[in-house]
Length: 89
Image (cartoon, rainbow, N blue to C red; front, side, top):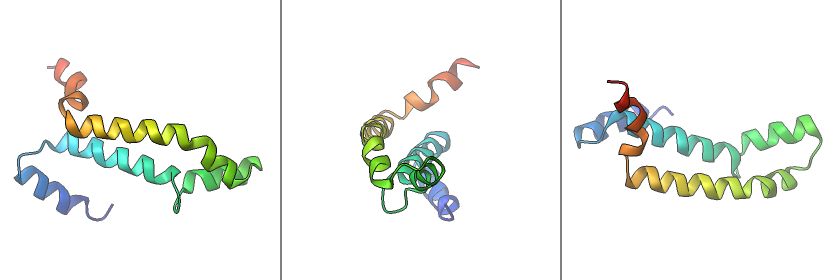
């Protein structure tokens, strides 16, 4: 995440909202933590439960597909990420 300050400055300079950009960054980090080759969450869960990492990666596959679809929706319609915060005004 060391490139976030540079990415944020460039994206807000191009007219993107900083909060929706942050939501997209967090969403991609979530996907990265459960997919190979990093898959840190799967390695931790398999070490603590005794389940093989292969079974862990296979078990998380439906959730990764949902996360990727959700990322595409949030990228296409960034107002969805800001809907609830807009109601608080």
